[in-house]
Amino acid sequence: MVEDGLGDLVAKGLGSGLLSFSTDLASAVAEVEAVLLCLPTPTAADGSTDLAVLEEVCVELGSLLETGTTVVVRSTVPVGTTRRLPEMMGRSDLPVVANPEFLREGTAVSDFLGPDRIVVGSDDRDAAAFVAGFYEALDVPKVVTDPSAAEMIKYASNAYLVTRLSFINSIAAVCEGLDADIDAVVEGLGLDHRIGSAYLRPGPGWGGSCFPKDTRSLVDSARRGGYEFRFLEAAITANEEQFDRVVAKVEATVEGGISGRCVAVWGLTFKAGTDDHRDSPAVAVIERMMVAGARVRAYDPTVASRSEALPEGLEICADPVEACRGADGLVILTEWPEFAEVDPGAVSAVLEVASVVDTRGVIDRKRWTSAGFGVESIGR
Ligand code: UDX
Image 1 (cartoon, helix red, strand yellow):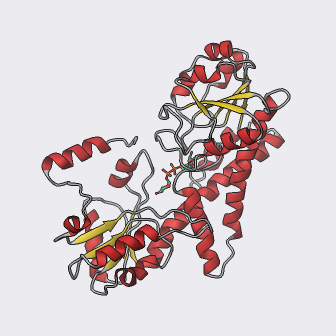
Image 2 (cartoon, rainbow, N blue to C red):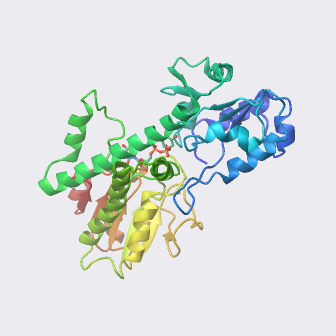
């Protein structure tokens, strides 16, 4: 796992005796004042949220916890779940609190120590104050509310962020058609203090282990609550279309199309700074290219070999230039800074056609065009 600062923190915690790990739930929760649930809540096949792991753990906790132990839900769970915890545990003497985390992969430690806000939701005021007290040392706003609002804040945050990303990718598509430069547009847009510049970088689409899952979950929950969240569904559809648009760009750079040809890919993870390729836009694009009949050779600094989670037949290469050997075109799908350092001359020496689709804006356009490359990007 690539997580800045985590190794040191864990070592320090273990060394001081403040941190310990156990696979034995009974001994781990004996004599504790609070239990924090950080459990996976994946999407089920029907689009709903699969709470099986949470339910299973709650049943176990119900038979183990001492009266008064506070149970804190840190996982992203559908609105109403925290209030159902007493029923799942078969106990009404354990205060329950929703305390969603907003950590990003790769920067979880700094996000934890410097959050924008802390959200705590409970129907039990004392329990809410107790959990808010965990974060006393952090001088940030603390939103103390009821459990449903706390759960909703997490979903609304992620839904808003993906909407921004689908919006900017759509603006980029408009820019391409009308010959406007997306970089200048993003700069001018982000300087409006009502808008801000974060989460406005166009790319191959958004992904990761949270955004796709949480947006689908919110669409599903909304429907159960009697509302068709068409606006958010449109953001999801725009994202799928973004993957298709990237493939179309690659198709356009390879004469005669990609069927039966070989495409080199730089980047497999859903963003730089992580080794996670679950629900990665890069993988979505690769799958589409393979369905279109392309052979794909890929390089990613954190992926040394093909795992089961990667498409069958995908070739993993040891370095970026090697991935390009004999390929008919190159597409960059993750913004790893090291890609900017690669010498375009070394790439053109092994690539059949000097063309690159840079979906993340990582390479120096001038340097690559001077080296004879056709450079395609998003929004330009
Ligand atoms: C996200 C949320 O940010 C975090 O608050 C939540 O707890 C978990 O989900 P993470 O999955 O680590 O965190 O990803 P994030 O860094 O937010 O990026 C998500 C996706 O958006 C990536 O595919 C990334 O490349 C893309 N992105 C992000 C853009 O395309 N442009 C941007 O400007 C920002």
